[in-house]
Image (tube, rainbow, N blue to C red; front, top):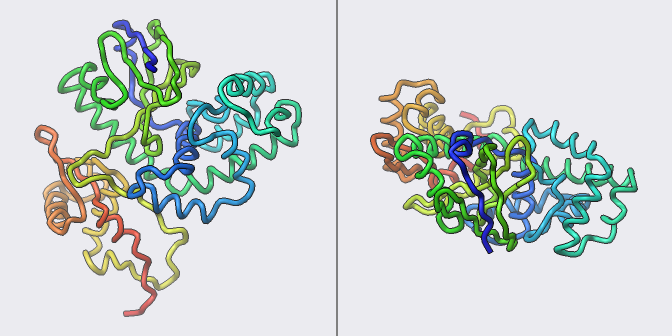
Length: 339
C-alpha cells in the first residue's frame, strides 16, 4: 500500500529538513525497543534500556506497540524542547484524546484501561508519569547523540540539494520505501496506510530519525505543515554502527580515561566528536574540537588507519563516522588506578 504526497512548485520551495521532534523520536524509540531488528546498532541500547525500565513503562508500551497505530497526542511532531512537549501531553484536551483513541481502535484493539483515559484524570496522570519515565530511560541520555546524527544527515541533504536540487534529495530519502515520481512522493507504509495528500503550498517538513530505522512515518495533521520521518542512512561500506551508549554514571574522582591514555587527549577528543557528530566534515570536525583543519585531518587519518573511524568522500568533502570498534573503545569503562 502506498501513500502519495502531491507537490506543487510552492511545496518544493517550502520543503525543509528539521531536527527530530522529541515525541516523534520517542515513539520511534518505543517501537524499536519492542523489536529485535538491527542488533548490532541497537542491541546495547536495548539491553541497557530493559535493565532500567520500571513497571510504570507498561502503559506507554501498551499504547505504542512495535507495529500498527499509536495515539497522535503521544507521537506528535510538535516543535519544542522535550520537557515542554511532555507538558503538552499532560494538557491534551479530553476531546482530542477521545478522537485519537477512537482512530486507533478502528485498526487494532486498545488496552482495556485506555477506554477510560479521556474521563479519568488520575489515569491520565499515570500515563504522563509513564511517558516521563520512558523518555528519561530511552531518549534523554542519548538526545545529544541523536541531534548530532540528525545534524550530520541534514548536512548531507543540503549537499544533495546543492548538487542535484530537490529532485536528488527527495529521490534519496529512503529508496526502499520512498519513491520520488515528480510531482508525487510515494511512500510505502508498513501500516498499510493508503491515500493521497495534496500539500497545497504548505510544503513538507522532513525529519531524519535515529530510532525509526525500518520505515518512514508521516503525520499529516501536523501544523504548520505535514511531517515525514525517514530513517537516517547507515549504508557506509563498513556496515552499521552501534548506537553510542553514554556511560550511565560519571567516572569517579581520580579516574583516568583509557581513551586519552591510549590515543592522547586531542586524538581522543577527535574520536569522541566524530561519534557525537557522525558524517561530519573535516572542517566541521576542526571547529567542534577547536583545532586547525590540517590537524583534524591528520588525527582522522591516524584513527582511520586504526579502523576506529571510516571516511567517505562526497565530491571534494571527506565525511567521518565512527566504526563499531571505535564505539566499543569509547564505551570502555574508566580505570581508577593512580599514576
